[in-house]
Structure formats: C-alpha cells, structure tokens
Length: 291
Image (tube, rainbow, N blue to C red; front, side, top):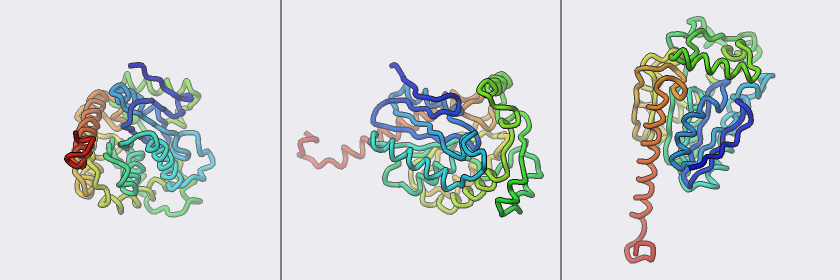
C-alpha cells in the first residue's frame, strides 16, 4: 500500500491518509511530531488514517515568547480531533509523555466520539532517575514572571537508551537548525503550564471509560513508572499495561519501538473489531442490513 505523508520539516505535522478509523497522536513537551513518525507509519500501513498535529506552544519553536497556556494546547488538539472525526467513523487518541495528558483530557471530555486511548510514557511530573533533584523546588513556583527566571537542562541519555538512535535523532534535529540548548532545555514558563495541566488531568481521570493501553519503561530516565500506576488506579475504564524492559522515555523512538508499534496495532485492531461487533448487535433482526 502506498502511503502519502504530508509534512513540513521536522517540526511539521504528519498526515497519513487511510480508512474510516482515525488515530490522533500528540507529541511531548517542546518536541515535535517526528517523535511519533515511526508509530504513525506503522499504523498507516494497517489502513488507519493518522494525524500527528503541530500543537502551538507545545511544539518546539511555536512559542518563543512563552505566552501559551495549557488550555491553548488542549484546544489545538481538540480542533485536530474534530477535523479527524469528520472523516472517520472511529477515532482513537494517544500521546507521548506530556502529550499523553492532553490526549487523556480529550478522551475524558469527548467520551461519545473517542473509542480508545493509547498512552506512551505518561508524565504527571518528571521524576525519573536522570532528572535533577533541584527540579522539585520548582513546585513552589506559582507565578509566570518567576517561572520565566528558570531554565531546566536535561542530561544524558535524553530519553533514548540506544546510543546509535540517540545520536541519529540529535543530528537530525541539529540539521534542522536546532541547537543543543534548544534540544535539551525547557523554559520555566512551559514547565509551569505542564504542571497546571497535570493537576487538571488528574481531576478528570475518573471520567475516562474508554479502553486504554499504557506503555511505560521500567527504568524510565525522565518519568518514573509510578506515573503509569496512577492511571491504573484512577482511570475508570479497562487499562492494559505494557512495561518495557529495554528502553528509556521516548518509547516510540528507542530500542523497543517495534514492540510499541505492534502492540498499538493489535490494540487498535481489537478495538475496531469490538466496535464493528457492537454495530452488528444493534441492528434489529429482520432489517435489511441484518439480512
């Protein structure tokens, strides 16, 4: 099957045309859709329509002044969902890291239109083993003017366990004009909005009743496994957990990306089959469709 991808550089959205089942994916904080490209193409090869949008404020380079709020991120993903839902009968949403929080909020607020949820390395707070302990002091910061005085730098391995993949990703972004500073630093205002988003999403987890699959590394350098356990406890619907043993935070890029892709495709197929069975069950006996 030929797959036509519409993109605009490494920061550009990914649109892959397919059938009447759509998958909407949100990237991580200050990241880009490239983080989800491997997974997006895997889903598209199975016939799904896939959209990985640019999310103004969350996508790298879209809010240099730091004026966006988490509500802007959510509205952007909601708009992308409405566009996809207009073309598809079934929609599955998912997200990586902080992007998973925006996807979860969308699933909670749009229960009638979203059939399932795929969550990759969910992050309610960056508490992995590579995160500096000084970041915990930032929890005391409540105002944007003060938050803007902070800038948080990541340290190796930058969410990728495989050194070869890590170097490839770094060089790919540098070729697109991103400096090391922009790659591995997060502005304080952005982190403050992420914290506010996480607080809001925690309040609505009990409203999520769609089937959910969660992928999380056992040794995540950015986000401890307890972030995933929170979803098991609080999401109201069925939660399927996949604990990965040979990758770090960017599970859609790292060593076990094939496992993530295969299990995501399997989850989507089961969900689609269940939706089809439900439609058949609702058709009255003796109707023209049933006959």
